[in-house]
Amino acid sequence: MAAAEHSRDADHWPQATVLVVDDEPGMRHFLEKALAPRVARVLTAGSAEDAEAVLQQHRVDLVILDIALPGKNGISLLKDMRAQGIGAEVVLITAFADLDTAIEALRAGAGDMLLKPFRITQVLGAVRHGLERAQLRRENWVLRRSLSQRTPPADGLVGQSIAIKGLQSALRQIAAVDSTVLLTGESGTGKELAALALHRLSPHAAAPFVPVNCATAAPAHLEAELFGRGGHGPGRDGLFVYAQGGTLFLDEIGELPLPLQATLLRVLDDRRIRPVGSERTIPVEVRIVAATNRPLGEDVKAGRFRADLYYRLQVVEIKLPPLRAHKEDIPDLVAHFVDTLAPRLGVPPIEVTPDEMGYLKQYDWPGNVRELRNLIERSLIVGALNVSALYQSLPRPRAPAAPAAPLAGGPTDLHTLEKRHILAVLESVGSDKAQAAQLLGISRRTLERRLAEWAEAGPDPR
Image (cartoon, rainbow, N blue to C red; front, side, top):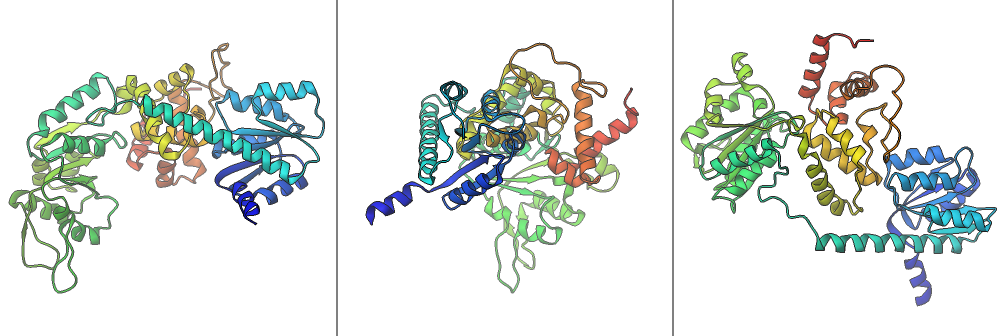
């Protein structure tokens, strides 16, 4: 009984994802039914082309791959997977095997081969051995990484460019004083990271750092969130109290409703808050760091933002550079995101070829550092860097080869490809700008600014 129980536990892998690739529906159903109770998820594909689409969207731990497939065969698919850096374990299955086929399969990177017809115990044994090999590789990588881990910069800002060094210098210079700071810059440039660096460099680093996004909180509840609630009902403290002695980071300050702008101005002047529904005031000692990707000066002229609050926040203003202004930092940023995200996701790191890095440096990054981080996270999940995610019609670059032929259909400069990608995404969601911006990893304001620039420039030359 104990031995049987142990056997059942050994053949369960609750974290694993397995892809079954076979053109016979009966074989796919048989393997799916056998594995589904034992793994986290079973994905299926009837051809190599369908499998490639699945591998671009999902991280897979093990592939059970038929050699005889319509179109591209299984060994060709395996070779392409390895060329793209997809390191999932592969168990090949075939009804006809010879020595030459077995040698080719091993050279291509297969971990095991099963001859049809096979028993379920053989399948489970091959899956067990493959997942054990994958686990051993992960453990070895974690050990190597722990021995040679990069030391992150003290202020958390990655890069050696003049722009980043200037930002680091400015933050260090003003960290020692408690003046209000306004951080400006496009969406995705890392304003919260800069605010956190400012806090950590200050004498109050041990005190709380409390971020609040003024654009996401409902206006009806934002006042109580910031200042707390008193009166006769159940009271609670607000974020100003939680940040006592530390830093309160007000992101998207331009979205703050006008009545709350007046309240915030009084707090900045008096250093006291009044909870909603209360008659008493509470003294607070909090440093305010505000951030915006909006031109607040224009909002002041249009009456959308109070001039007195703007000048009160603008005691010290620091503008964060867009990523396109310091592209030389992209290799350091890529390495940083791989180092920090891979352990969190529980996946091995990815390698970025010189050609791929060249494409990353040419792209204009409308979503800035946040868009680069999102790309690296998606690539880690899939198991390989997918540069074509940036340009819909751009083939993924490979190791040094002959110059690529021009793409059919017009200009191939990256600015044009970027524009086509954004417009294609916008069209795919029925011109819903909010949804398109979310898919692109940029703010809606950034998207609208790009569209306005292209409208002024006129149609593409043909």
